[in-house]
Picture 1 (spheres, rainbow, N blue to C red):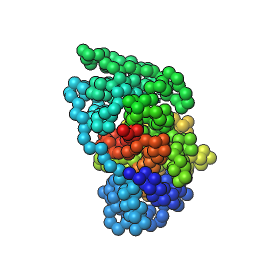
Picture 2 (cartoon, helix red, strand yellow; picture 1 turned 90 degrees about the vertical axis):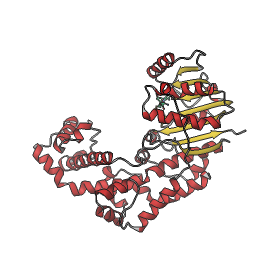
Picture 3 (spheres, protein in one colour; picture 1 turned 135 degrees about the vertical axis):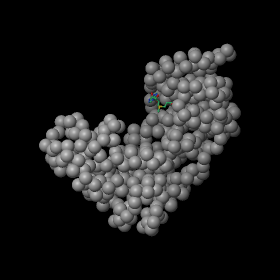
Picture 4 (cartoon, rainbow, N blue to C red; picture 1 turned 180 degrees about the horizontal axis):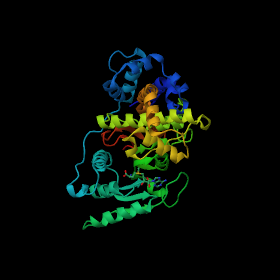
Length: 404
Ligand SMILES: C[S@@+](CC[C@H](N)C(=O)[O-])C[C@H]1O[C@@H](n2cnc3c(N)ncnc32)[C@H](O)[C@@H]1O
């Protein structure tokens, strides 16, 4: 794939809409709504509940404004990435105790590695957790494997797992407890070098992905699957490639948080739940503005799940107590307030549904920038969709090899 052309095209599409995707809707409300063209908002207002759900899946029902359909079509085309097909079926014994998500990820990662790592004999896993991938790679491919993680407790669990399932011919996996950081680390850096070495990071949170890529410049093969992009900091972590630096987009913390929201096809129940969470949060925000204007934006925080299932008054009171605030309202008045602001909370929801359309495109921009960094370091690079997003939404795999 021509990563440069793709990044350039995405930057051209996304740039003009930066005021919309780079800012928080709620914190800037109602002014933030002005970034959304009036015909987009009028269209969103006109759709029914089924249409809202379709919009959440990136589909436009009825007669959408031409500028909105053109943008979504173009973002859809530019975020389409090839799929890695195939899986390496694990046995019942191998998957015992693993979640469906973990099994799915492992079966796909093993299948991806198999044909690409014929020259590999040794491997390192960064942020390897309990070492499931390391254990299976060591056993499937016969590699000598070091699994590094800063969490000693997780590694202990992994050691026990390894011992429980140990094989007669022994295992070639060692756990190393260390925090992997940028800059020289003489104890672990050699584990990332050598043409017969694979460097693997499966769901490396935030900047850990970049630490892996930088440490792995001397590796023969690199696989990275990132996550938690909201833990990145721009400009430290984006752009990282020269080409990306020449075509930068304003990745604010709000935009980085949005990249973690790219998620295909919520079920009906998941969508209904999202709507309820939004409805309560937005009504709480409007309440706190009305009652405590001097406080400015008040963070409601994540409430216990059950509070979103009950009446607004119970949710609001829980949040108010947590914040040490007393609105001087009865439960009936709190519930009546929520009903009175429904038109406005729907506007907020619709703006969010529109803004969410940018999530995947922004995530792909971050990954293209990383792909270009690897190309600039001399690797041959692939960027593939690897996991079913319903099971594992952060499903983009960066694959880099030194070639023959
Ligand atoms: C999202 S988990 C992924 C674990 C495992 N790769 C998997 O897919 O199940 C990220 C892991 O990275 C580890 N981690 C985060 N930052 C780290 C760092 N700087 N050095 C080493 N490990 C780190 C965490 O302890 C955690 O186990």
